[in-house]
Length: 227
Ligand code: CA
Image (tube, rainbow, N blue to C red):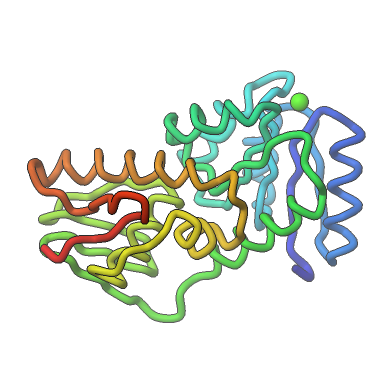
């Protein structure tokens, strides 16, 4: 993570200082903001490699900040929430964040997430195009279309669809999907895979009504059907 620039947006001094220490120990440079309403103007001056964004912030809520950032930038964002129950709700809101961590967290866990998200954000070397029936996925532009119409996906939904499309017919367990898409193993996140898959199916079926593209295999996991 040498020379990566991370922006921490967190009003709790202790937490921000702890994260800053850990990230700097990994060779990152760290900037910090206390208020949500300062983020967009900061980003217009200098875009970091990744943002750690707390939800409860003075000035502007972290969710609104995330939405505003996504209007002009795909910079990787990891949201910080105070409650694990909030994660499901956040996933449903489709804010376009790349990952979520829940307080209280260990700084090591956050550093692992930051590494995983930065690794995923590396641009692909060449464009790989995956096809499944009328679904076309471009890896470098992260663009997905169904019959020429754009399918708008969150980073996690895109990652899941890419993995399933690259391995049609293969059944993936939830744990496997978490570790291959998110880049780490953490059992508690199995159920968030279900939420991502549910959202992904809903979006696909809006453009491909009546077709079951992703099947759940009872007690095992998920699979992409050959169209
Ligand atoms: Ca806060």
